[in-house]
Image (cartoon, rainbow over all chains, first blue to last red; front, top):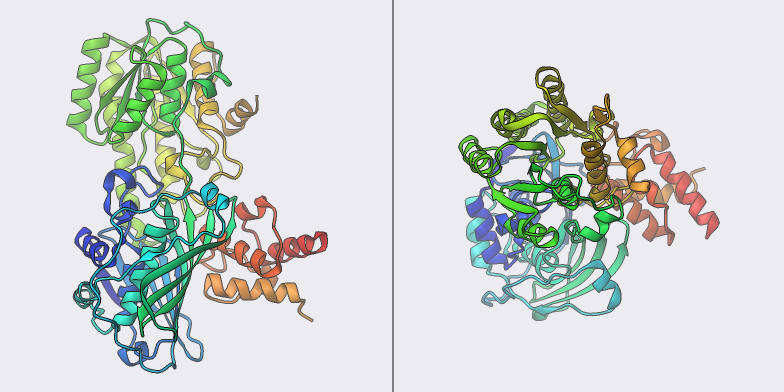
Amino acid sequence: MTASRLGDGHIRRFAAASGDVNPLHVDPEFACRTMYGRCVVHGALVAIVALGAVEEAMLSQAKSLDLRFAQPVFPGDDLTLRSGPRRPGQVAVEAWSRGQLSARITVEVGGSVLPSVPPWPLACRSEPRRLTLAGLEAAPNADYGDVYAPDVAGLRELAAQLGAGGVPDALLAWLAAASYTVGMLVPGANAVFAAARIERSDVPGTARLEAVPGARQPATGLLEVRARFGYGAASADLRLRAFVRPGIPGPTRDVLLGHLPPSAALSGRHALVVGASRGLGASVAGALATQGATVWAGYARSGGPAEELRQEFGAERIRPVRFDAADAEDTWAAIARITRAAGSLDGVALCAAPPPQALPLHRDAVPTALAYLAESMAMTLYPLGEVLPHIAPGGWLALVSSSAVADPPASWPHYVAAKGAVEALAGYCRRHFALRVATIRPPLMRTDMTNGPTSAIGAVAPEAVAAAIVRWVLDNRPGEEILTPDQLTAEALR
Amino acid sequence: MVSAITSVVSEAFTRVVGEPPARGAKTTPADVGSWNSLAHVQLVFEIEQALGIRLPDDILVTRTTVGALIEAAEAAVSAS
């Protein structure tokens, strides 16, 4: 068993040497709008590190590589390598991080010695394609190939620094080509690399990747890509799988009006929505705006979506305010600005939460779970502690929890604990402040934060949940303190 | 006798999850840590490809037992 840690510098070097500059790996602004919330280490780089644990003599006779990516690896994660299941003619390595399997790499051995790679310079495109499943459906037999050769010297140097100096050049090039194919060619920017089978080919080729999309699973966005990597005597055939993430549109006035008729019931009222640029928060801000409220829309990073929200619902209704709710001074300064401009607030919706990642209840996952809980609590407590004195008597407070509190899914103990704490705070505020306080337990919604393979199946539109929350604000029904998933789902079906 | 469909599901499981279903049709996600939601989606995909069928979407979000996958595959093959 060996351990290593991959950082931002390693990611940048792999991106430069492989040509895979997919924004999920190298663009924090892009990555923060995905279900991962931040940049992810290239799966192929994890595979290179894992292959460093295999005997060089075996690797030099590799016939094929089989890669399975189970969970993302983030910069700074400790990566532990373990021997995987052994079968005749195969050797397998598993990479574990945060107490769970991240990747399994199986090498089929027993072939002739791998050939040398050609001395071709890096040749690649600089921007990823942005193909969607619908676009691929429209041109099912297109070849998305391109000229390609990786910088093998750069890959070799990086591998050596990571303890994988014995990985043959041909395998480094194949892994780079696999990463580049899904990350840059097809589907490109919206890809999440899931699996690969790479087989050496006896048919030599020039520096080119031919990539053709194959079978797909529309409900999840899973796509198979068949590619041929022409690379002199070290050519290879690739069979790759990636999830294609669909775009998640922001809330629109038209969709919201389908759930909540417009009114002027909140005209002259001021509300603060924390976490208002995306997902449920954006829909709550939009729904309040359709009722005439002036909405101070707090957001941390997603300036573009916040501006789109303002344009959709009107500059007189939506007032974006940039602050990071997990940062005390940033939050205090922003709330001071808001309350100076607005006077008191009539209501506050706390919708911000860190993007959750699956974690087991395991000792290796505890540091990550604690960090998640701390960030989640900060994003609730800093705004809450500052804004409470500024909410007008009889005003309202909505705290967003989750249906997971009542029905905890596997691998989300930290998330359930964080949302349980949010609910406890709601109870505290209900008892000790003269406010109407709602605990919101949304059902599964499709948002940037949940935009995974199965998130569309049975998901409820955030606009529908937001409409139910604003109806609670408007109706002022006594005793209604917890908006349950069933209530909120029923709202979506109205 | 093991049916052809059971063999297909078992082989797909072994490829995707990395180990054979330890308790056969009774194997659950609790028995195999790496049978997570991403692996499950790919497992369904491999079964669909191998048998030339389409399984219902609810199979994609419910991980119960290997036996449930076999039953769903048998039903889809019968209906095709």
